[in-house]
Amino acid sequence: MSGPTESLDPESLEEELAALPLVDHHCHGLVTRDLDPTGFEALLTEADWPSAADRPGPLGGSLFDSQIGLALRRWCAPVLDLAPHAPVAEYLARRAELGWAEVDRRMVAATGIATFCVDTGYLPEPVTAPEELAALGGGTAGEVVRLEAVAEEVLGAGCSAAAFAGSFRARLAERCTGAVGVKSIAAYRVGLDLDGARPDEAEVAAAAGALLRAVDRGGRLRVADPVLHRFLVWCGVDLGLPVQFHVGYGDADVDLHRCDPLLLTGLLRATAPTGVPVMLLHNYPFHRNAGYLAQVFPHVFVDVGLATHNLGRRADVLLAELLELAPFGKVLFSTDAFGLGELYLLAAALFRRALGRLLAAGVADDDWTAADALRIAAAIGSGNAVRAYRLGDRLGDRLGDR
Image (cartoon, rainbow, N blue to C red; front, side, top):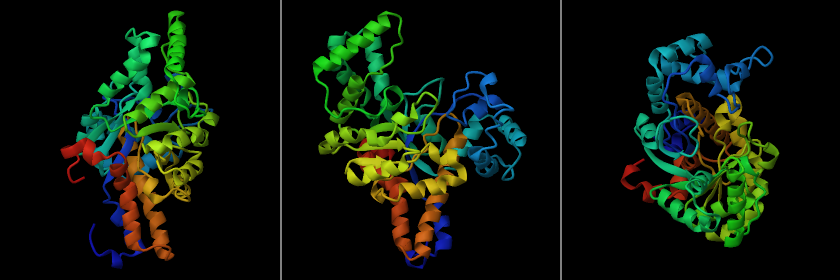
């Protein structure tokens, strides 16, 4: 950043923040194929569209007529050499002309994201590996291991119920060699109202046995038992890795009323003495609750990734509400982008603008100095993630000066 902070005026603060390096502490890979208009629009939303017949039609209109659709035309069109707000048809034609690889390269390179912490547990189709994703922006990457995916791998390999606990611990330790964190999707499977107590071996064996018997009867091998989810989380804690939780907003498979982070209070109390960071992801529409938890529990961190790009111009309000209570040292940047390079660009651009406007307003009102604003922005943009995930230790030379 250029120039002495003492002379930085609010009008130029947003410009300064445009160059802020970012660590994306929760994201996913990009699809490796060209998309028709229906396939592209499907990846703009968390909704599940199994076929073209399920996409929004005359009854509900197009997703391009929503906050994310308008934001896409504003922020992404210029990256494809189009005028801001280019018509949808023109945008999609230009995207098809360039091809998915060039579009993703341009979008990710324009984000200023230096480090990507990639959740590799969601693979509905082939997507870019963490290193491939990071290479698009000339950055570095670390893996976030999804706990339920490892458990299902172990059980699917013929492990007995009695041996499951030990086999899972061993396999998780192996999978986490070089990883930067683990993630729980208990919110999708059973909700977040999890008892804080660590389950004993007999409880784990009984729960695993019930799942295996259900599979024998033709059921799906899918971890969806509160005992097993608690066991998986505690195993992640035992490894000392930050534990991410999906919270709040997701796709139609989520029962949103069971995804309020306040339901995790007992588990947060139980894990606080370990000092292992707990990362509450997304949080919308419970972001104020998440900010409260970040204030009262020393090991809790929060973000509003996924919601940022979906809210478009309302991202300003979202981030401001999160920062009402959440200490600035407990807030992290993330995209939770999946599939489309555009989602990385939108999340980064809207985050920078929202944070810049909030901090600039504080400088203008003499609530904090420009130097404070730049320091806070650097912490939220990357510093908090580097500290909480110990990225310097875990990524080593790959992190470099980023």
